[in-house]
Length: 76
Image (cartoon, rainbow, N blue to C red; front, side):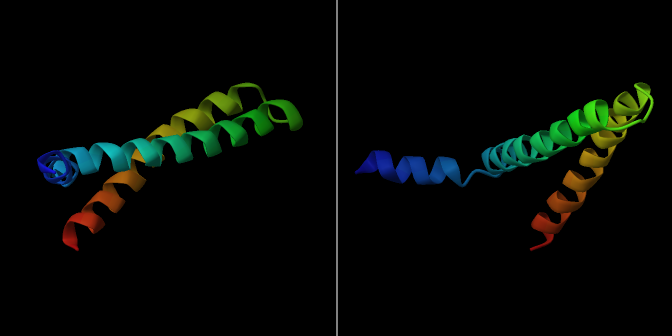
């Protein structure tokens, strides 16, 4: 019984919540970005360096999105 109580306190820790949320966000966002990049690389007439530029842009953009989500979550 005490173990369940300790687990619920642990799962409500802000650092763990942020880590889990960030992991889920990166998994979903990363999968979408890989599909889009693969599509650009294999099915388009774009130059080959376009995929690399897209990945760099997506890395910066994902940081921006996560910061916006995180500040919105902290304001609630």
